[in-house]
Length: 287
Ligand SMILES: Cc1cc2nc3c(=O)[nH]c(=O)nc-3n(C[C@H](O)[C@H](O)[C@H](O)COP(=O)(O)OP(=O)(O)OC[C@H]3O[C@@H](n4cnc5c(N)ncnc54)[C@H](O)[C@@H]3O)c2cc1C
Image (cartoon, rainbow, N blue to C red):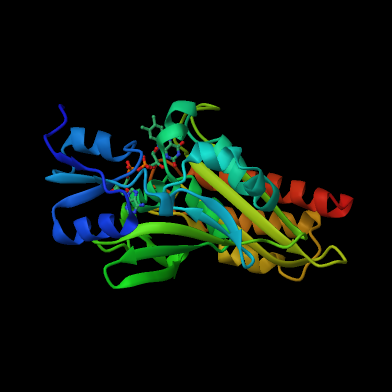
């Protein structure tokens, strides 16, 4: 289908963008356009105007402040991938970004667009869920903050109001006893949408026991979610083969894939076991 006609507005500040969004109820924000432009071609939306938020300075930086990594909503996946501070503090985000699409898409696609689009196979959500990320939404009345798990409501649905912009993803910087891993399974090794994403984080006690764990799964439900029974099984325990096998089984059992995709439960179990075994090895090796 051809692209429908629209006006493209290019505000230069966040305030101006928010004012335009409030004044024009039929307008939509556009960042990289990697979701929105294909949607417009399909006829899923017909906005009179698009408000380009990709150049807003307030949305474009990654910085560290008061124990948090602050990732602007307009930061691209390529910028996330290349950022040394992200690699050092939250390597799981670097891993996630390295498995995201391919260079051309990564150069345009933003973290804010990925979360607002809220596709079931959105790669950033599971990685951010295990990091306990929060979302800042700016609107005419100011900025409100939500845990990511609350922000994501269901497939293609979030708690964002139409006159709000996702300005920032806030990630508490994990301690130096935090161990993470991310794996994406798709139909190809690169440049594909996820069939399954699994993300894990284990916060270890100094004696090597698990203080608490986070396990998040994507692409097997309307939206990414945490496998809380599997997490609870690891808390306070040594990550030995028995504990890992049971946690992985619980992670697999948490999934409710669509009919015909029941294999995903076994794959989640195998991937979770693999990630947790790797984490246990690193905890033991002190690396
Ligand atoms: C070839 C291809 C491969 C892809 N591969 C992957 C992949 O591997 N993994 C994956 O997760 N996704 C993938 N995608 C999907 C897409 O690239 C991502 O979802 C991307 O992150 C969307 O970001 P964007 O900046 O392009 O958003 P846009 O398309 O500009 O916007 C998406 C939605 O978010 C809204 N929006 C954008 N920015 C903001 C903001 N700051 N505040 C409020 N609303 C906002 C828009 O109005 C729109 O509703 C792929 C897409 C393509 C075309």
